[in-house]
Image (cartoon, rainbow, N blue to C red; front, side, top):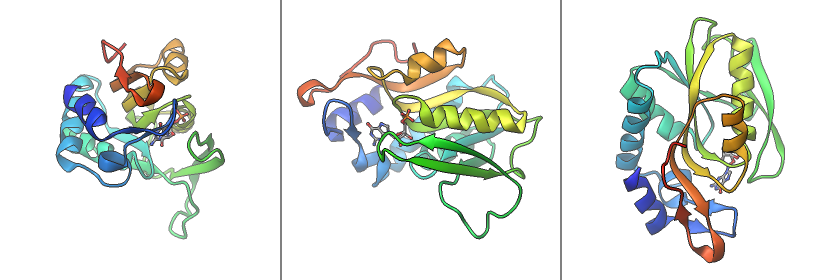
Length: 194
Ligand code: 5GP
C-alpha cells in the first residue's frame, strides 16, 4: 500500500535495526484518514472470505481494526491485556510474549463475542516474530470459529513471524513489508502480500 509506505518513510523512525517507531500515525497519535484507507484495503482483500468478526489486541490494533470492521460491516473484538472488573464472565485466555515490552501478557476475551459459527479476521499493527498473531490464533481455535486470515499493517520481513505463519498455511496480508532498517534507512519488499 503506497500511501502507507510513504507515511512510514516520512514519519517512521528506525529506533535501531529491528524496532520501528510509528507513534506519529499509528501507535500514539492516530491518522484517521490513513486508518480509513487501511480499513478499506483490508476489507477489499478479504471481501470474499465471509468474515463475521474482526479480532485484534489492545491497544494499537484497535484503530485499523475498527476501520476494517466498519468497511466490512462486522463487529470488532479486542483481546484485553489487563484484568478488568467488567471482564468477569467466561473467558478465553492465552499468553503472549511481547516483542517490544519483553514480558508475557495474559490476554483474554469474553466467550460471549465469538461463536463457533463465526469467521474471524485477525488484525494487528505489527508482525515481528509472530507471538501476538499466534496468541490470537490460539484464541480463535478455542472458540471453534473459522479463521479467514491475518491482516497486518506493517510486517517486518527480516523477522520470522511472516514465514512461520505462512508455512503453517495461514493467509497473511501485510499492507507494508519492511525489508530492512540498516543505519536508519527503511526499505520495503516488493510484492506486499507475499
Ligand atoms: P510479534 O508478536 O509478531 O513478535 O510482535 C508484534 C507485536 O509487537 C505487535 O502487536 C506490536 O505491538 C509489537 N511490535 C513488534 N515490533 C514492533 C516495532 O518494530 N514497532 C512497534 N511500534 N511495535 C512493534
